[in-house]
Image (cartoon, rainbow, N blue to C red):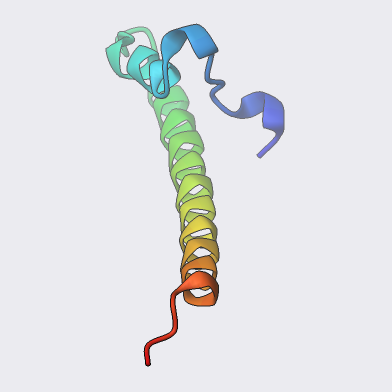
Length: 72
């Protein structure tokens, strides 16, 4: 997926502004093929976010282990 295809967050919209806009958009004008393409794009974005979340979690756990006070 190209960077240009990903939903963008705007500082004025808060953390989930783009997702809110997508959720409120009417889907009536889309064809079945366009809806399938939109689903694929959103699923790819979900996978990208999950991958980033997992990497961040692993990084946090490593940092916590490194800086955790040693028990006596």
